[in-house]
Length: 154
Image (cartoon, rainbow, N blue to C red):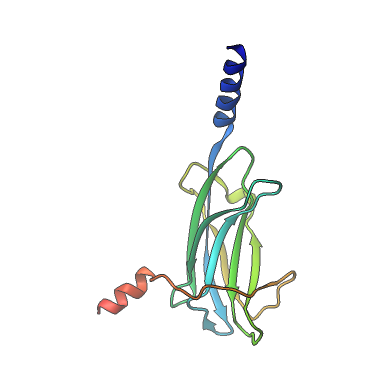
């Protein structure tokens, strides 16, 4: 009986140690002087160790190259938010260029809804980024952006 109670208390203490944390990122992507429209973007919470990485939100830039992603996760330690961009700007090789941006921890807020947004600013994807990777298999399926739907109605 004592053993069962000890296990129950252990699970309860772990559950209480978990806390909701959230993050948001926004900005605009360009390819040269033109908006980088329909670029695939993802907001991740990367974990080290056995805990798998968590996809917080995924989407695409709008017709002006603008984006806003947000999400959250319950973790015992501070989350490690990463913003990823998959694009073909200034590129002729197979697959897509993949760029990762670490989001400062000062933009992590407590709770399920972010209280602050990290503004990446305007970024030209012609830039050659250090440690840039390639993603050879990338889904080209685009979800409809609310702005695109509104334009179709008129």
